[in-house]
Amino acid sequence: MLIAELKPEHCERILSELTDRFGFDKKIFNSFEFYRTKDNVYACTKGAIELAKGIAGVQDLGFAFARFGVNLKITTNIIQLIGRFAKKNFVTLNNREARQFIAGEDINLEKEQSTAINGFVIVRFGNDNLGVGFLRDKNLKNLLPGAKQLPTI
Image (cartoon, rainbow, N blue to C red; front, side):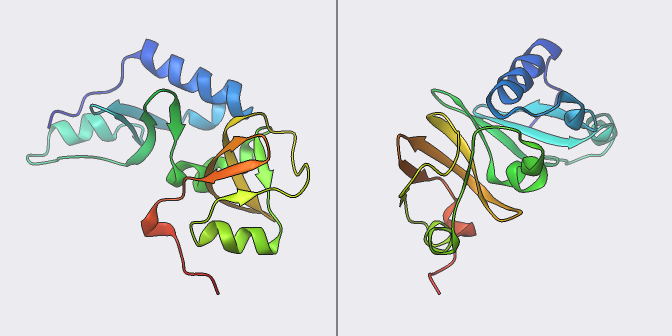
């Protein structure tokens, strides 16, 4: 696989979409560079792509940052890394709901727990970012990858 840095216009579009949706300051992305595969965008440390070009056999770098579908979906990996910087579109769960979410369950929110608008949201418990969900009214669809789920305790 050829690893090539994402074109600046594509990078700008992706980062603009994420800053608009979550209120991130674009400066938090300054230490990353990005590359794309068919359906995914990966993030790695600045300079890593150039360094990898000189190393035979490098297949990938960094970690999955976002996935393309109908909409751009930010990954659980990046949410757990930078989610604390989001200023909007997050849902805060109580203890019972957080346990359900970590177990892979969808959540019916009992009351207005955020000012998030329908669409992808960051799911939080206290100061921890648990992952990504999809909010539709008071229904929170769990998008936590199976490998990150834990059985209910």
